[in-house]
Image 1 (cartoon, rainbow, N blue to C red):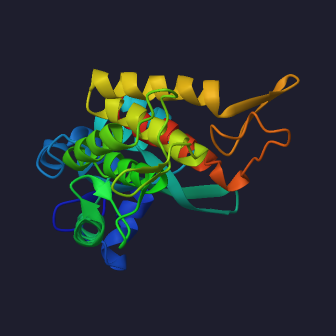
Image 2 (tube, rainbow, N blue to C red):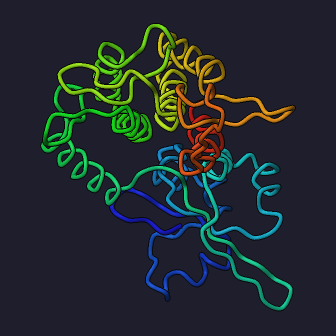
Length: 270
């Protein structure tokens, strides 16, 4: 188990045996993690969040289950593979636990300070001329929920709801500058905002945000989606489905965001 000032990395017996010679003095074996109170309590505080990386071999997850190694199991459930090796019929993989460390925290804090200084106007993320787009707001909402910034999320959504939400469609007007310039929506902002609201509602147990997100999903189906026979497509915005030739913008699709949120954020906080 490799440990920095406050975090550690679990690994198997082979890794633990090699670690002192390889410059990893804080590596601990899974056996000690499961059975040695000085390790699972003294080093890790009985908390999987203290784990940074796991070195995995085939069958180790079952070993965790058999040994009741809760810390290793929980860390693995919140981790993703980053590298693997195989040779002579054997294999190893390194898994990174999905949580921020000191470096990530510093980067998030610095980027948040930059955004606040240059763009944030009490919940409105505005360009230099004062223009606010629904796309910018949706990015701010996603960033806030992904980074755990509940205050920024609340302020950004409150501003967006008050100034951009079109009561007749339930979607966001895409452009504002002192007033709404164009009341029509852009479907990329609609879907990103709905996703952010659902994640925020789940992450912070906020029934209002969950309800807002579900209403926006319904509005997307009612106003952004176009039906072509048995197929459905997300058009470019609420203005598009009534046209003879319906514009569809592939750059508006974000399957990576949906996959990430489902497998990582919602799984972690559910």
